[in-house]
Structures are given as structure tokens and as C-alpha cells.
Image 1 (tube, rainbow, N blue to C red):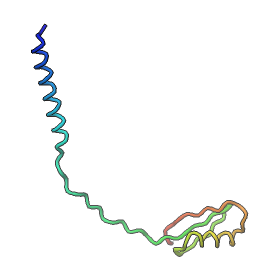
Image 2 (image 1 turned 90 degrees about the vertical axis):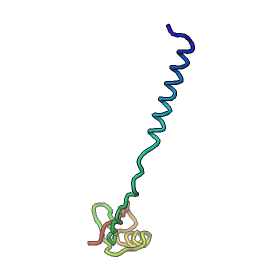
Image 3 (image 1 turned 135 degrees about the vertical axis):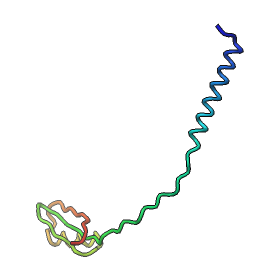
Image 4 (image 1 turned 45 degrees about the vertical axis):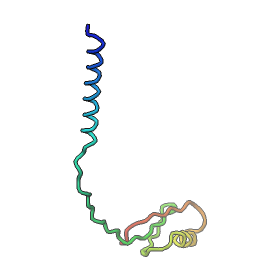
Length: 88
């Protein structure tokens, strides 16, 4: 069995190796910033659904105005669902 001094030396060497590995992990090669071209967003309209029926709005409207129109078109009965869709 080794002495306390040998044990302390091994601990010190181990700590140096751990420290070196940490610093190696911290040094990552710097990459240039990734340039992503902007994706064009097509003009959007709305589809309004209720009980299997739907109406398509081919213009960009304020959602509140679209739902108000849908309530007039469908009546106030039933659940109304609106979703954004690309213009046709």
C-alpha cells in the first residue's frame, strides 16, 4: 500500500487531468453565424367552420370582424372555429 504522500500526488494529478479536460471542452471552435434566408409568408385568409359547414374569407381581415360576420352567417348557435389559411 502506498503512503499518504503518494495518494496526495495521485489526487493532484487526477485533479489536473479533470481540469484540463474541462478547459478542452470549453474551447469550442467558433463557427460563423448561420444565415437563414427569410421565408416569405403568403397572404392569409380565414376558414370559418361550424357543424360541417365552412365559409372561406379571401382577404386578410381582423379576426374579430371575421367571427362577427361568421356569427351573422351561421347564426349564434353552435361552436365556431376559425383557422388561418393561405389565400387561394
